[in-house]
Image (tube, rainbow, N blue to C red; front, top):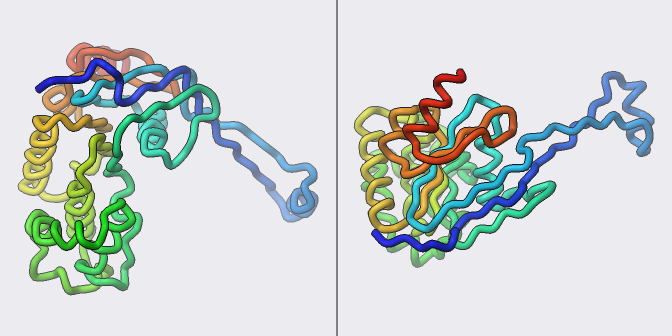
Length: 245
């Protein structure tokens, strides 16, 4: 598989801060309502992060909860912007994060395929063409005409994942979703990810499973307390992370 030496994703000195506002009592709330005495605190999710990913690489992101892993995915997906620094993304992104965020519980599985597909950027004609493949991958044939409010969480995730992987992305973002569902479906998901890798799709994979990071990824970064601790070969990065836990 050939790889482009020009980064498809590049973070340069990226910091992401969130402003938190709080009023503890109704008395404190009233002045804040008119723009006075508002208590503001800044939370730093990422601090001065720099790294790049070339086309066709699979990057694993590891670190404890709250380290900033999901924030990186959201910056790549374009759902938020950095407070400081620069994020460059050169390709169509399919975010397998917050799967099914556009699903409507009152609609059937079939109707939600069309709804979620359109949210992810597919035309009706494209969804028509992919519909049977989406249904076959989800294995939800007998439930597809039921409202998804009656689905189990596993069925819901199957349908959401099946739609998301048919967007034909250049960059695929995965946030722990492969931990959802039964063993057979997990294996099916990983097999699909391997197909994506072989076809040259760039994959960014967040997971707490060191085994899957080591076997699946070509490089890794380790985050802790909003900072990039190290990056490089997955085996080396995993050893550093596990030794410091």
